[in-house]
Length: 492
Image 1 (cartoon, rainbow, N blue to C red):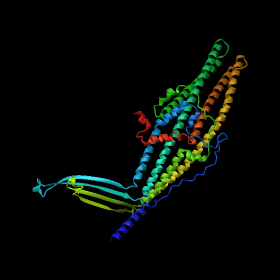
Image 2: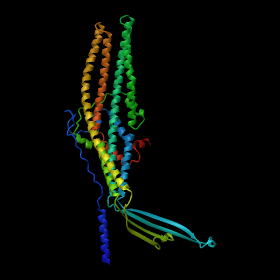
Image 3: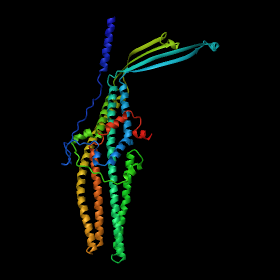
Image 4: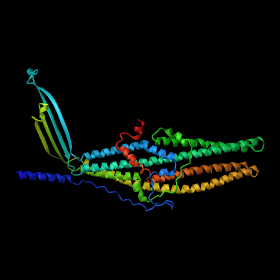
């Protein structure tokens, strides 16, 4: 009899181990194959195939004010704070799903006082009694078909996706701060040019007015000179509006009020210029360096695991449950003179009929997975498009600046010659005004093109996925024990 019991216990243990070692149903995730070109179509000789150094790329622009603004934005931006909160949520969800793989144990205790009587005549007398009870309940879902393991797998991929979401937020944030800073400096330069030009044109208009009063010129020349000066001055308010918008955007990107950086931006500085060409690497690099591509791939992995979780719900669920309890009329007797009860055994739940609900849940999960498969390929194509567009923009803007430089040089010479000829009577005053207007237009276009070169440099770094490498580790450390976003903690 003892030998038989031993055999039964051994068979039970073997059965339990075999059930625990059961395979998780559903598809196992494999990263999808992506066919990419071997080189960038628009990467010239100046863009090598070396792996680009994207860590803190904005420092190559050599502007300490910009560096400080980026550091403050990373520390205080509200989108970054929200992304950190999403990481904490995803990590907590992962720990929660991991807990479902282990047994659970609950304790309970109760105490009651009751009175019983034989009838209405004995209602005032009755018998008083106490009842105390304590016990433990345990349960363990064996997860034979992997429903909990697939849920845990999906939660792990979701946590990875949350970290990539933070990295993508940082890439966008740093690019936006740098772009708005460059544009603000560009507007400052254009406003200064407009004011210098308008001052010079007003001086010309005053001299022309004096010549008219002396009978040396016509009223048409006075009107043309005055009108041209006013036209140049009219561009200043438009530029001021754009400058204010860029400065206000910088303040908000730093997680502060719009006017927060106005005082620091008031002193003009040169437009930041990239130092030398940036290596573009090869197209395959974006699969690793672009956080939005990594995010899309992790989402695909997450929803592939959810297919397995939905499939496992169609299979039986096996659990082990146990309970032990004690009860006594005195609380001190619970551990000694008490009534003890216990129970232990397996339970089986089998889905027999649900009108196709579980099968439909699998089909929903498969459709969601397919959507993220398409979204991943779309993210890859968008990344390739962004890089190619940035490469074209940088090359063409450099060509444009070269042409505008020649244009400014020649228009400046034309303006000088037209004034000399006008003073000798060999040219009309209209030629002077035309040359001045053309020079101002060329100089303004030159500044605008310098801004576009710098912003194209920013776009290329963003397209290559730069910006998050150097700050993501430090930023993720803040997530571990942070209960509030850095901006909110700072405000306290």
